[in-house]
Length: 129
Image (cartoon, rainbow, N blue to C red):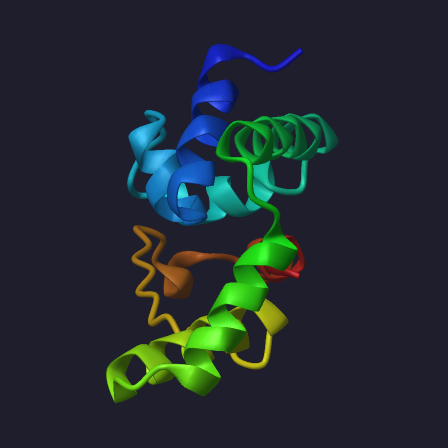
């Protein structure tokens, strides 16, 4: 059973599939939202709840992913507007995982590495891996 915060994360996540923003909207710290979202998505209970939410969404919408892909294909090949064709190809490419979005992430730390002992530095590097 998920706690309220994790449930809220899942409900936010299915809105835009952005783990960082979903973590923030669910009440997690903005400073740790990126790593928290990443960690939450790997929890079995969270994954199960997301699948349940997505299945419910599909039922209520009455449309399958195959139908959406088919509609995008038709737009991509037969639309008279170039902007519609380009957007359709872009969405199909994302769906197929042909490319991913690049994100620049800036991490700030309050740790002064020069003040750490060799053992503390080794431990910090191990934790990062």
